[in-house]
Length: 474
Image (cartoon, rainbow, N blue to C red; front, top):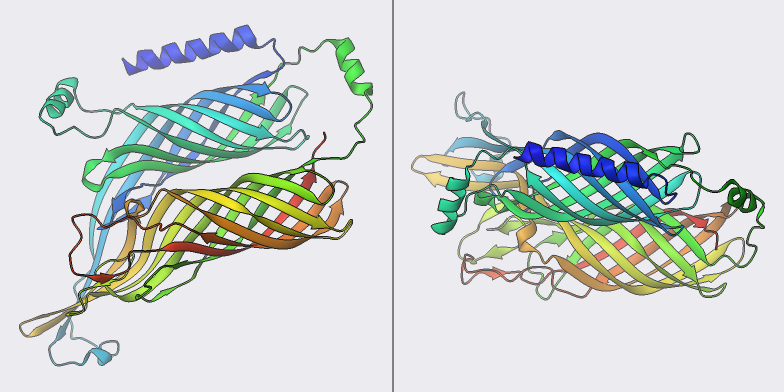
């Protein structure tokens, strides 16, 4: 049934291509590439390693004026996951002080070998995205945008009877037959001929359906694509001639585009902060669009991918935050909590100077959690009879379920710009962001009562950014 549906969809899309290829605003093409799986959810007992899988598809693009386009496609993607449980257990005789454990050399056979338990999940999907993109009107074209996708599971080994029986009994059968979620894209394309472009594209997808029930796990992937785009040239030659000899617009350039890349130092603040927290470093990248109100003031928006979070090192019952009952110590945790966000700012920019310009940014932002994981190590001590046991675990927990999906706050920054080439400026700046919302979800009924713990976290970050500001034609 699904193979027939795939054939019908491909035929329908090819029919659209053949009927509409005479329109200058329409383009079509194909792509292929690789994706690296990224499982989301509350996965706090095992290490999940990403695996590479194939991706391919065909697409149709329609131009909405000079700067924007909408794209739809039929794609195939396979996402592979591997779960690895790692445990290293060391046994030490009773009577050796804890401070000397690091230098103690146990007798032969007193160290248990590492234990590995492997499990694999493989999913193949037929995917239908709808994407809105911004594209620069340049020869080397930069595009960026996002949208939604709907996908159908192709390698489903469950029968309809099994799924119906599970639904009637109140125990749905997993994995789900479909998925939906968000898709963010950025690409570079270059014209090989007048009608043909090659492009390189990066994507980030985040699914919203639970696919592995036991772990409340959802699909996600980082994708790298290479493809070609064909745009039939059907313009009237007379119109083309007039277009070529038209006088360029010499008025004040109001619009500009600024791709940025940099490093972020992030930490958290809250009401108690009883645990031992510190800052962590991550990357940031994005695309800023500006509109000048005059030569000094402009409005800016866009999107940025930012790695935030914090480092945690203390005795706790949780790997990602401080929690203890003060009567007995929990395991010792040394971890990094990595929170990946897509940030949408709205800023007012004040710029002073001509060739070398100083600027100040002030504004607000909203950011959406794309992924959350906790990495590091945890150590726990046991005494059992005549033996002393020390367990060490390597952490790679997905902790998305513990944090709010949306954050917001205010930001401010300053920087300097130098002329680089005609209509291009080199940009160097710093930006401070202050979150105003508690990003930690309220503990559920499964949490232990009576703990002395942290339950209020707020994002803070200081970013160093490098960029190129490109003037856009009016």
